[in-house]
Length: 403
Image (cartoon, one colour):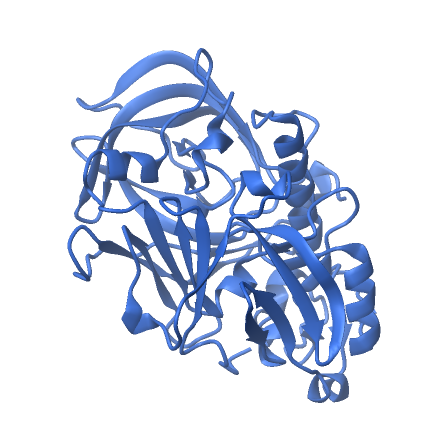
């Protein structure tokens, strides 16, 4: 892992920033809020170190039941998808990182919280750790607006201190409610954004549809659909798989899956998590070593990623994730980092022809895998709290060759 000071000095980040929100009428009590892709870079960052630190921290938190801030976790990398969220009356917009591995919503990083007539301080302290950052501050109840949806008395954290959230205003937590346990003083758990949308009858089902368009596309956009999903964005039926029973992945949006490369199994059935705020696809060390060997890749010391030649890229085979009995295939192009964006990951050669793989080693004592947003960009995903399951379907971008 890189120390905090090193990551701060080399920090660069890709942000997918919410454009002005709009509503897409899909069916009753279902609202989609837009996302748009945008780069912002300031040097180089070791994505692998940040993702690995996050995975290890999430694993430790679930095993110990301690989701609050831990000062010993200092690795910081912010790369992800954000959404514009309105808070207060009069309403002010904040760009929040969409995080499926946490339940708390908080603000106060890049932009300070503005107290309005709907703001109520509870007097309770709030603190959360993410591995790739943390925050601590005070809890407020306020009105949150997501396009046409309005949530009253939503618990939000207002940061007094934070680490690792340069370029965003805070976090929109869309993970299970249990992830808020112990994060607010004098409170067991707090209702999440999704909990309150459902309990306040803004949506019929506590379901979130997530659609990320690959950021290398000419017009990268995406949507979060609250209360359901958008069939028009899918090119296959939905495959559902139950939340895994294996601890500690079961505390998150955890699933069971296996992975094959061509005809070779590199990861037998294992439990891991689906995480919108992780960049890469992280897999267990033995599976990573197997993938490295079959692809012929070498570890690039600068970026921390696997690197292959153009000839090796030509020979790449499909990487197949079997989830719920259905094969979800990453084509060779889907297995590589967008070459036009190599500068973001610290490729000092400045050569956009360099080819890096998006599969990395998760390290020891953690989950069997983490499917980050480089996986989710290729598939529509559904996070279904009502039925305790996760769903996936292919999209028009599953076989995109834009990378």
